[in-house]
Image (cartoon, rainbow, N blue to C red; front, side):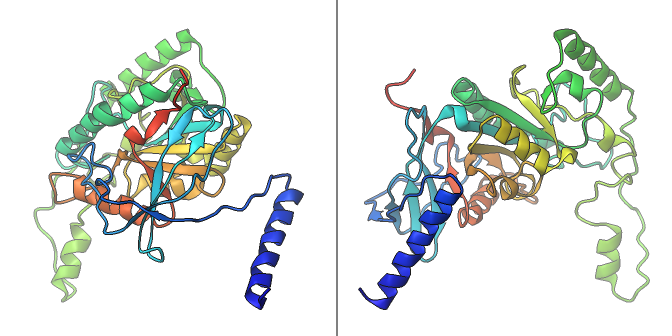
Amino acid sequence: MSRLQRVITGCLLLALATCARAGEPGRVYHNTLRPIENPAPLLADHPEYVQPIEEVHRFEAPALIDEPGAELDVRAWRFSYNARGIIEIPNRLDGEKTAIVVVHPWGIDDSHGWVTPEPAGVAFFCTKEKNALAQRHAADVINPFLNAHRGQVKLVLYSLSGQADPIRTKLYRTIDGTPTAEERAAARQAMQQAFADFDYRAAGLPQEIMLASGKPVIDYLRAFPGLDASPTYDPAGFWDLPIPVMDAIDADDDDVVLFDQQGYPALRDFLKAQGIEHVLVCGYATDMCVCKTTAGYENLRQDFNTFLVGDATLATFPANTTPAYATNQALSYAALNLLITQASWVRQEEGRK
């Protein structure tokens, strides 16, 4: 046995011993890559929302997760510069250990009554037209995905901005409790009243900008940035309103809401208490909230087997009428250190009902 072989063998034995001490079964994963001939583009089901992904080299690897009694087939892929291509990996997940997390499905400019401030306010995807597109995406992709798998996974969870306020904690099941039907009805009415009573008017665009520093570009952009969600354009109190789950999603009474200010440790502990080991992440926006906020994948992948459902997300798309290219890019970058799946790749295990 060569010195290199002895080192590799020693590392494997150390890894197995570490798993054994932690009470986890150790195994060696055989990272055998088989070229896929003439593969179809990835994420091609909804090209209006995600530009399909194509690469020169595609490979298939052995199953990474293969649980006894699995209810869900979840094929996924990632990109490796070192492998010089896309690697596809089949997985079989136990639904009782699986959660679907939808990041920031904000109900703005819909029937709830929380609306974009005028004349120049910004929220969610930052224009009314882009917010309407996100609503269509939720109706076309996320809602059918949730309805198809709600009975196959342990729970569906939405993350929303803000803190656990008195209205939403009585409107939704949360990580801390479940309201009664009477409490939900009263909270729904209180939410509608809060939205109706709020004055959404704020300042308009600046008409005069002082260019005093001798550097006019700096002065101009400082006074008139591309995105300003401060009280200048979104009136004071706007971000304290009880942001709801968008009405394009048929939220079930058993679905759970987490509030960002509760923090990731609270989410982690709740999911672990529910027996969750696998998380399928959806929501808005792929390049921002879906990765960076409390329920974003940068947190979740530290503690759970995390899969990003690529076409069940949208990236921000400033200066464009379509999110397709921005979402493609955000997913392609995420795929360096995350497994990406798509709605049609999450399927009921064959032979199960």
